[in-house]
Image 1 (cartoon, rainbow, N blue to C red):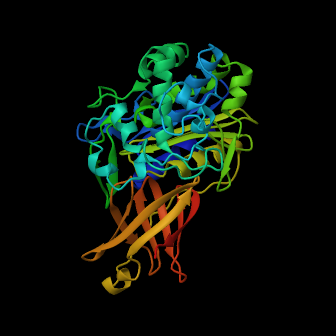
Image 2: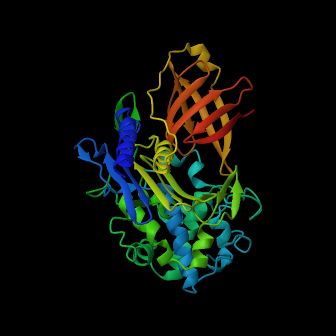
Image 3: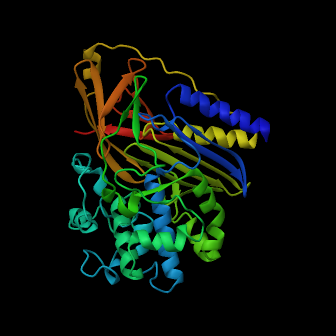
Length: 422
């Protein structure tokens, strides 16, 4: 184990030295921790270091906990996953056609409120759940419920409301009482605004500097992405799930109910063979927790740099734990291009991942090419060659502008193609 720990530490330190990581990691086999350590600072202005007990916003990993709450309420006889949402939210449009199962699997057809052009401009403003729901409830469905999958944060906001109405507790009270307390997850909960002591502050990396990310009021994430947690608490959660849920409920949680772009989706988690993955990205933070069921290997990576190489680190840590080949990171080299070359790539593009269509705007500002994916903040596209660029968005992204006019992206380990709009 000593040699494994040394290799894992050397890997994560290499990413940290390159400015590609700040956060905490944990690797475990069953109940035994193989490696756990913090890197960089939770608060760079005050030089407060990250540790395995530092709390990070975990973004969409929240969805897995929301799904667990729904399954627990089903076990308690307070709802059924097959219920139409109209049973719990009377008067909701298409309430007889959309079920809780559709919300849990992103197959409802409800558009995602996070991908609207206005989201990043209003995300710092506190909003009630009722206001969030009012913003998308009357939009037309993207497709007939159950017809296909399209990742949608909106459905998870509705699930938060269902949990409150079925349990007569607030969303935060229910998950604290029925999930966090039984699993001794003492440092997990709804993120405070502003962050409390022991919580990491979110940053963005660029040109060797870290800058605080724009303010995101946590009410705008709610049951879709509002939780914070620690590396150690997430390991407790992974180990405690079989005690928390009945075997049939746990099987439902991790069963690939829907498929999109080659990825199976359970209830709030991605499923690929024996691997169950819960990942998240939000303003200032990215994270991933992966359980490899075949060898009971659990790896979690929590970062307070929103463009950290979190999936690359998780993949390499998994390889080290299994005695497989892996690569240490290297520094990217950038070039300077004539503005006329940059002008070739400006325009609007659309792309699809997890069934959800997103819009990407590429613009030129002086001698820089900029990119903005709706729902994320604008950032620079830095040229590595005349056709290859690098961007720090929600994780690390490499983009190849092709002769066809399309853009091939490798986004945090996922291959995505963006198409120019007419």
